Amino acid sequence: MRGAVVCAATALALAACAVHELKDDKPRLSKLPPIVSPADNPTTPEKVALGAKLWIDPRLSGSGKMACTSCHLREKGWTDGLVLSRRDNGDMNTRHTPTMYNVGYLESFYWDGRAPTLEAQVLAAWRVQISADPAKATERIAAVPAYVVEFQKVFGTPPTQDAIVKALAAYLRAKVSGPSPWDRYEMGDANAVSADARAGFEIFMGKGRCSVCHTPPVYTDSKFHNIGLEAGKAKPDPGRGAVTKKPEDMSAFKTPTLRSAAISGPYFHDGSAATLEAAVRYMARGGGADPNKSTLLVDTNLSDREIAQLVAFITALTSDEPYRAPQLP
Image 1 (cartoon, one colour):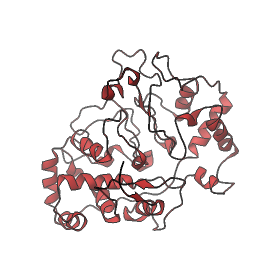
Image 2 (cartoon, one colour):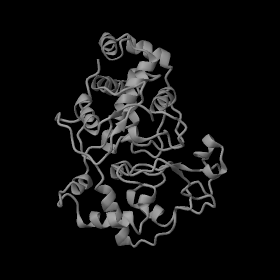
Image 3 (cartoon, rainbow, N blue to C red):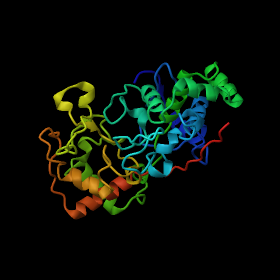
Image 4 (cartoon, rainbow, N blue to C red):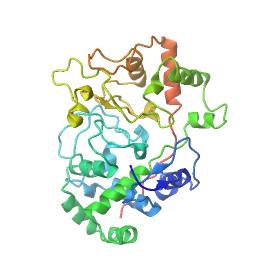
């Protein structure tokens, strides 16, 4: 991503007050780094607030019944809690809905990284997931007088397809995690987490080798790895390999963030792990038996106690900021 850096305090203030997702208007401390906005879509509070309305507006969809938020719910860590979700047109997705938390830190989007920018991802999801003809959906938005006024204020134009995409992308960049118990612990609150969570962090950074791919403070390396989930399937999902056409990328998928992972199950690109414990156990034993599996994955021989401590640590990465949806015009 290129462009001007939005300072951490500004990004958090956007998440806290411009989007109306937090009950107070005070910026919250975080261990997360600054967000970078592209030069052609700088983040502003007004743009984020507009995007927050579009995010929940079903008028953007083909049927007029599905909104972006239909598959991304705050109480489920901005996922939908389903193994696989259904599109607006009734078709089933073939991959699990990923979280929208902290997508502003990513450099490519979707499980396979096929979208090079957040704007490209938003446009693709608009067309495919909520099955819209963007031109027709834009006409519906442009027929709402309050939207016309707001778009004019933010973009200096009536509602356009490009402006809708940019507003939604700006809103998503403001979805920075609030401080989790682990953040508060690292900032000096010794009572913020349990002894098990503290032990779990030591395992995470050491014996468990989790931090090799789930790099703090965002807890992802934004890279793609084959963890063996497609081994033995009749039609293996090619993952990143379908994008790069490289044999070494076959069935490789992006490392998901672990922030708020405790509330965003089921897990993995295929939703095959029903619980966080099951996902941790799978990774701790070195993943599946795929000959093309990443060499970073090894059996770490963790005990049941150590697995439980890892789960306690990951659970401590759950942020608790409240969400209040804006009013639709």
